[in-house]
Length: 296
Image 1 (cartoon, rainbow, N blue to C red):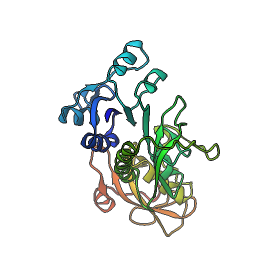
Image 2 (cartoon, rainbow, N blue to C red):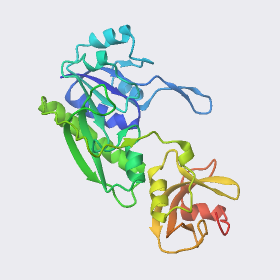
Image 3 (cartoon, helix red, strand yellow):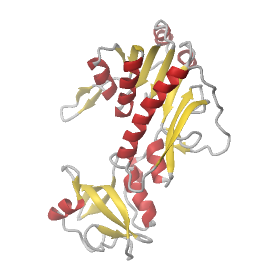
């Protein structure tokens, strides 16, 4: 099958590899290189880097809404386009160009968590399960019918980084299965249970110790590794990257020993953190050079 692949970040790379092994990828679309690092030199996205290593043709238009972009896309004569965390809106001319349309790999159990940050939001909301849906794309935001889906349990101390990797692997397997079985019945999403995973705002990342411990723990794990929940320690912003619920009670923000902090109800133990300008470290290692005050 002739496939156009459209994706940009690390999440998309295992999917690219899986499709490359099974089908002919006629073009890879991704976001343009962005300035990164100390020198702010343009750096290609993970998908572009991997596609070039595989010898695949790469395109990174800043928009797909021009007649020229649509015509160039159509000349590829693809059977299908696979879209996973691409980052650009696909206009109708693009959605309709491949013979079998455009398929999206979405990291949630639609219609729950449509939108930009489904993995973060599932953990932050305390969902017990999530999964991957292979969706036939249409003009609405993640509103299309679902061709294939699979659920997974969210583990009690799992971070967004860990769940991200599991769902990426699952998405790669499901899209290959979907392509092998096309055409599949397209099941409309139910009207009930729709939620939206809005983009993560950095303003959400400061820990409010007055919140219940269960919510603080979800925030820390849900924002790990990016943007990283944080608290201020002696004037320094410290990222909190891993945590677990702990026994104990005290005034919110009170340090109960080690890196255990009292919350509005219950307590949270920080198990991994990152000081400014340093690498992520286990909490015990962080505390060798950081003296916590009586209260945060």
